[in-house]
Length: 311
Image 1 (cartoon, rainbow, N blue to C red):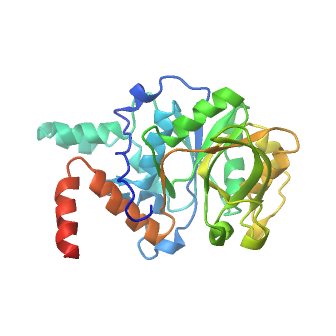
Image 2 (cartoon, rainbow, N blue to C red):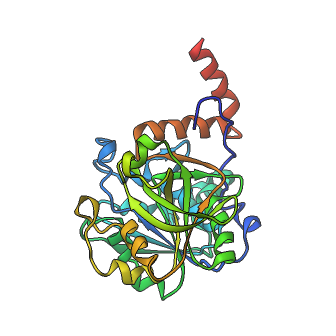
């Protein structure tokens, strides 16, 4: 977030989700969480990068709460080795809950129980080899059952007054096509993103003509970079199954979407909200500071501390 911008809205929690959206055509979400998190070593040597906390919640919980707020109830985690902590986080912790209940710590007990609402199902599938984001999505194929689904990258922490995936579900219900979350990025950063080009349908929607994975600035077709949120039709699996290797020798989701464009319409959606690149240390620190400032309990005292610090 640029300096001087407004503090983002407080993230939606699972307690608020039922008021946000009660039904959805998107019932399943895929979370590719098999990455090694090498940019955060040594912190990620023995723990999943998705379990790194932003203020008081791990990154993966923000993404799951966003999906739940959009009406998703089946969370599919594509995991790898050393990712057991994610499974444990969304599992029942009977001993902890009993200890909190016996000590009368009802507020903390409620916090623990809200991590996984009773109507939410968590499913885990292994990505045995790190063959790219497209391959990770392919690993969830047999669990999707030929229906549209969401993909959320926990590294991209997305905060919106209306949760970003909920905004995208509304667009899907309008267009019934794959939907890609996009924002304009500086030309010198196009190498970090999938970049889309297309024709504007309205102020927030683009009919995508092509998508290019991490192009150099001089050949980038536009400045519209894809953020870590997708709604995809099951047709994507046919394209990913070809096994074509793209940038970095990996099976890229962007290449699968480019192939899908030959058979189906795809729309890009300019979402409202703030994206923190928590795959980078700088973005992770920015998220911690700004969400701490927005925290209803921690914010006021933390703001006073920062003022004293910069004097």
